[in-house]
Figure (cartoon, rainbow, N blue to C red):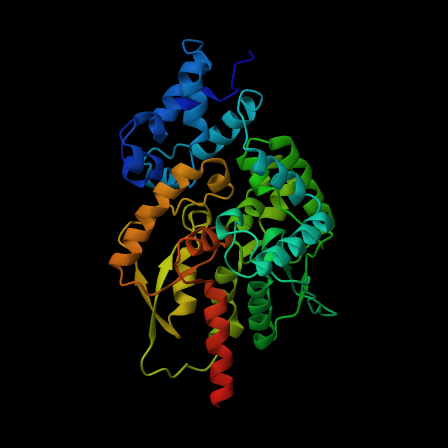
Length: 392
């Protein structure tokens, strides 16, 4: 039987409306509105599926204002598959929903790496010219004027996933990651521009068929059998969930060999064999967990393990609440995104205002635009590893 949203009844009824998700939902925290909470959105989904509720503007707004941080899934005692529900609902309502024009254009460009690189170079020139104020540019860090060229090893043992926007705007993070691999003697190859985007933002926007096409392309173009290391939490989560997106045996095998770079390094024997790092007084850094590292991949503790020899990690008091970036959420819902970020900024201030480390480019850019100094954990580790070599 066809239903308006095509959702599984048992997934919808798994939610018992206990409310334990509410403290972990950023949109509920800033609005105190039940229709902006996980259980409220599921209630609306049930109503639409049963035919008792029309697809109104209120329903659309409720679905569109979800950040998809998955904090509710981590907190849920009933293991409600909220991520799947919201993705499929957005897909089903794609003709009724209105995506921001900037988001539409951005998603189109992401699938065309050559155009993305050309456009990024133009943005870099505009950024340096000072012709436009920062509010017209989505990044405050300097976008590189040239594309990065990465060294490739003859007999690689891992694939380093470079993606799209991160490769165009923040290749210095990739360089740090590859520098660490080289120091440890880990041979690698990079995914590069022929592979490009993972399709995560398209899937989050409800463009599931486009995301599936991109996932199929990525799987076909990457070398078979090798572990795939990812330094972007959002991309890593997407690649790990290709099995759910495509529901094929090939995708299942692919997802099983995807690792966040932190979780891979912390378990690699060569990392464990490194000599102790003698730092008498460690700098303090605030660790901000990207939602897709903490709630989807569950790899956030690996970041702390890697950082521990070099710096003192300061924890935030907000229990991993989303920063409001949400992939492209800040483009499609700028007002809500800013309000959520304000909560994160308050937590950062209470933690002492140190440098923030975050393992996702979207979080980094979103926090940087508010004046916070942010580094990727891999950049911090790379700096201290090579500082130690210089000191010796």
